[in-house]
Image (cartoon, rainbow, N blue to C red; front, side, top):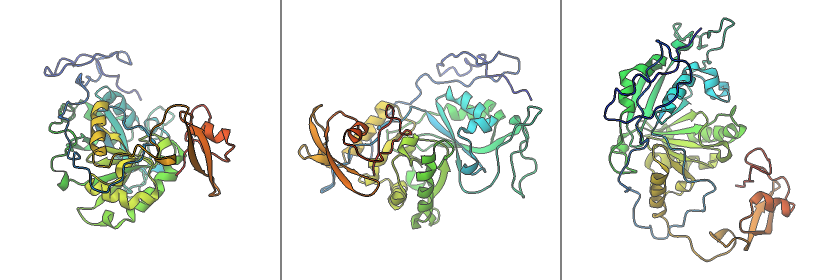
Length: 394
């Protein structure tokens, strides 16, 4: 079955208040081509640099530990989440390989600065459409009581979806299909520009809180190895099960980078947290519900989707302001900075539980330190290749 050609350039002047970037169509233009969506030149709105996190340093609080990960994430204007009735165990490594709809939407909306992803809330046991010998796609739903009118072609594939912005604004699409890309509802949603103070979410107290944990094992085993136990532990937390004020737990496709698994995205704030474990479940649920300024969970903060790098840096400064400054003195793990070449003491825990202390030079990678001191069974975060990974410990 033939699919529509990629968007043409004919519609770019329709929205006069916005300037747009031009792009080269990825397929020949035809009369049936989709009109492209107007793309604002500035992908992230400019906001005042202020935050409810800018509070006085609490007495007796401890400094946040040095980050094991970068404190910013890729710049996107917003996040479009599809709700799939397909469990993560059935997801391929890349959802767009199995879903013509997600592939098309991702291609079109990427130009508008929109991140496209998918979540599973535990309901449904469907499957993605499968190719047929004729080049079309078979039905997607395998539930016994499923709607028999489910999609049988790429054009008919449809799922509920929600477009999220960093100020908590959301636009719901009960049945997002390929035709939705041409709808005035989507165009109006994409033209929305968050307003207000950076870091504030008007009416956040009354909004539903969600924790979206990456369990995309087909993309990388660590996402399932660490993400799935975290989901199970979160669903056992009492606050998660309590009525309207509870926290909803859902599973999300690949997000955050597998080397920092487990990763979790919070709604409505669009905060990304990394290096999580099942033991963090209770603290994570409490943090998702209230985002207390002095919560130790801020140490897991990677960034906030919907903000550019400079804005994310300002938010991080506000977060750090709520914690006592790190002491300039100390040795070993207390040391926060040193001259390159300076020798420091490090502690490694082996797989047998033995603690080994070694001397290391500031500036060397932990992997090279491990090799130099003949430490056994160091695990790499990128598959163990010495040139492109570093060991981790927890």
